[in-house]
Image (cartoon, rainbow, N blue to C red; front, side, top):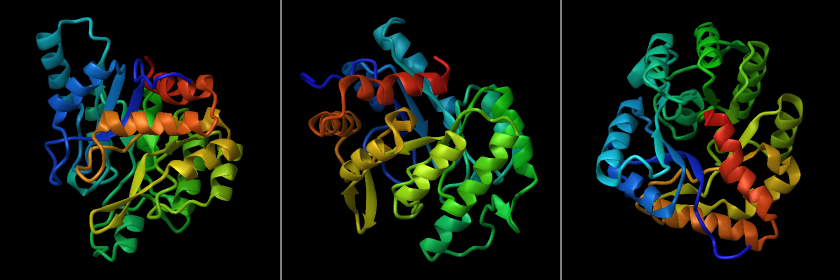
Length: 285
């Protein structure tokens, strides 16, 4: 593979300002970096709720500044944390009607997240009780299916993930992405990743780095190469989960990621599939 290019890439998991936690770029700066890089699309995410309205305004800004033919589009999402009422079908329906492309199960308010970070479990957002999905998730599944959106598993535990994925598949949800299974907080073993792909044909999102605490991050890239080989590239989505001030800026992190895959011997056509073709299919573009 020659000089790394971000032309046509799509990143379905990037954090930007405004946010409670300061991010490296705000929405407009991130979009400008994407236009400069030749990227096709980014999905912005916040743990505080929704981003589809921010994406709309960012796209209008890009059109006014650069014209209508940049080839780049920003997309929004919703995370079902306490800020939007948890597993709230009304909030999800509004988000989807306004253009959200990804619906994430709870992240920072999930029982798994709060348990592992020794936070209060008061008002945590459960997705599974007594081994079964909570009833409200059935309405979420129907909405995701009706709007041809993507369901991401957020920060739930591996056991919860298997339960939710099976129920979502039974409900007819087609686009299922297991969110950064490699992160220790999620903690899905490679064996379970292989099994969930084999049993349910889900997509595994593999991200650039994960926090270790104290502002330090660990590269996921060696583990990501191993997962691509074990699970098959057709079920791997390359995302950065970028935006942290401690990590390289979004476009630098993604270029490093792609270069690492190429240097590890992952064929160019497989890299293109994981960074362009698969996310385009998930977004319906």
